[in-house]
View 1 (cartoon, one colour):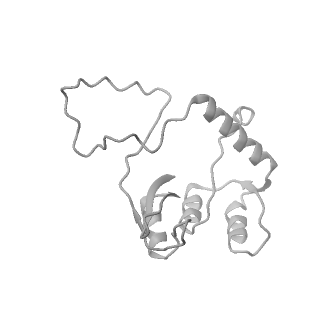
View 2 (cartoon, rainbow, N blue to C red):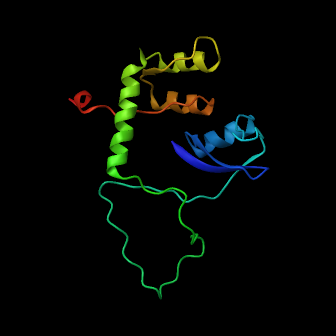
View 3 (cartoon, one colour):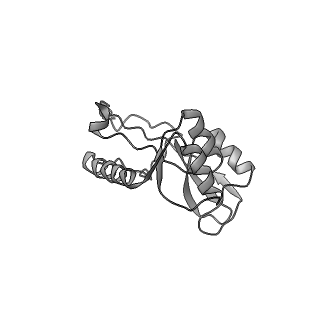
Length: 156
């Protein structure tokens, strides 16, 4: 899953979540990407730097004032600030709660997600299992889904 910074022709900035850059390009070409503010389908991808945080990442060494910054690194504050471990734990806890309350459709997740997306059945919260390829296909169709980390009990 990647998060892209996007902008419409009226300069409305927003984010889009996609399975890959190719998934974004495919959805854009099929007219599936639109501005959430004005509905414009004339959308472009803005340059953005990825933010990756790992548990074991060491802090970056301090840069002396005499060292030059690379030309392509923006000097403004980043749009996305790192999330504290406490906040991440609360979000994960909420996601797990929502998953517990959703209907378990098991391996039928891709089929049921499509039926809901295309209005063939009532909209409802579902959970289940899907292969990586199935998840990518769903995302390319514009069907949003989110993996939820298993609870500690599920890991044993």
